[in-house]
Amino acid sequence: MENKQTAIEWLVEKLNQCEPWYSGFNDSTYEHINGLIEQARKMEREQHGETWDAALIQVDKRGGVIFRALVDFDKYWEDGL
Image 1: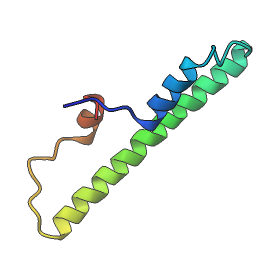
Image 2 (image 1 turned 90 degrees about the vertical axis):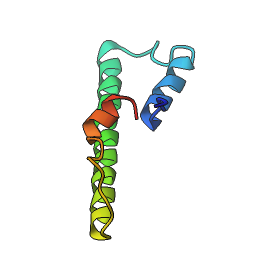
Image 3 (image 1 turned 135 degrees about the vertical axis):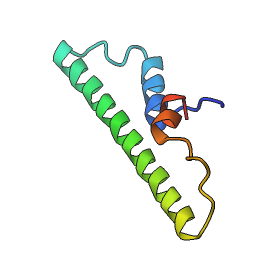
Image 4 (image 1 turned 90 degrees about the horizontal axis):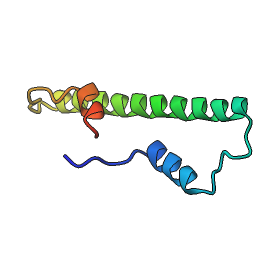
């Protein structure tokens, strides 16, 4: 399976391509921004998980076949989308 970037990974990559975007920050500001990036990553993962669950519920409601599960979402996410 091909690994794809999430929106957060893309943003961090673009920021890192800037002439160090963090060069003028003091340590606490830099840590704060990194904390926000981590929080955004967690939120993104949670949103994908909710979408995953909602899709499975819809398939089940329509009498669809739910294959052997549907790979577990956490494994899917860790393996690289």
